[in-house]
Amino acid sequence: MGLSDKVEVPPPIRFVLNWGRKYSLWVFNFGLACCAIEFIATSMAEHDFIRMGVIPFAHGPRQADLMVVSGTLTDKMAPAVKRLYEQMPEPKYVISFGSCANCGGPYWDSYSVAKGVDQIIPVDVYVPGCPPRPEALLQGIIKLQTKIQNESLKQRYSAEPLTVEAG
Amino acid sequence: MTPEEIIQRLVAELGDDVVESETSYDVATVTVAPARYADAARFAKTTRGLDFTFFDFLTGVDEGEQGYGVVTHLYSPIHKHHIQLRTVVPNDAATLPTMTGVFRGANWHERETWEMFGIVFDGHPNLVKLLLPDEFEGHPLRKEFLLMSREVKPWPGAKEPGE
Image (tube, rainbow over all chains, first blue to last red; front, top):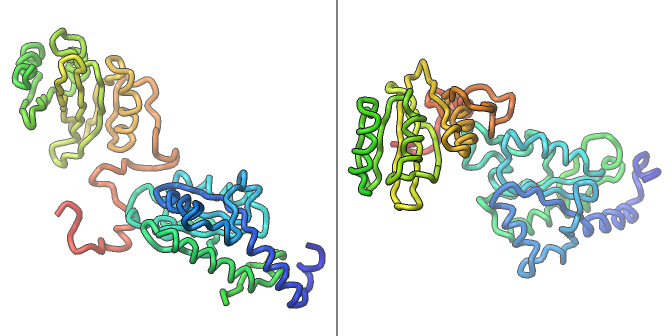
């Protein structure tokens, strides 16, 4: 991004750039359990998150801006999630969708289930529910878009950790 | 064939190695000595009249002090009758002869029972982990297996599981 990771771009330009980014989120659905069905329902005609610029046609993590981890993450699957997250190009975002991805959900005391996807990768938005309704995912996407709109490009494109609050 | 007749056929073949037998819900449950477990399955499969050619599942049960139970459910598509072959191995010597020589499909079931309960199947061609990660230690479906989350935080429900 040239200069934008060295200096803060002026607010009007930042607004335009962030506005463009937040409405073209190529999404990669990491479907692990029943929550993935709710994700699919959200992408279909009734709820239709494409109207919000969320595009569910990413061919893989290398073409995606947003990863939605929907479902039960087991310890055995965890390395794969981390690897695919690392393959995504910056800037990248993660939505943890459903109780299992948030904290282990009903399997919190299982021998095989990870205690939330945030144990291995950073998560931007958590959507609670078991499984959450499609409206909940839409709300989570709006939260993420608000976050992207208020982001500092300098922080986002530099190696510093992101500290922007949703406004 | 009725469950009682099935039990009679197995007792006639195996004699005192049939430790216990019962019928519930029209299914015969026959408990045999661990050493004859695979033999019992072979007899049930190959004997005319029994013809238990369909291997449904094999799994383990932690029965506490008594040892580890192993249950195999067999079905006959010809006669449409069922049998549960059961055996109990002691806690300190959980070893059984493999059933893969009788039913090749028992391979994965025995691997899973081995990793979950620590029951060793002698003669199994490839007794390695099936579902668990390679670095996993312990046998998680044994009741003695400690769940770390439970150690850190007590069960939050009003009743204990199984209560």
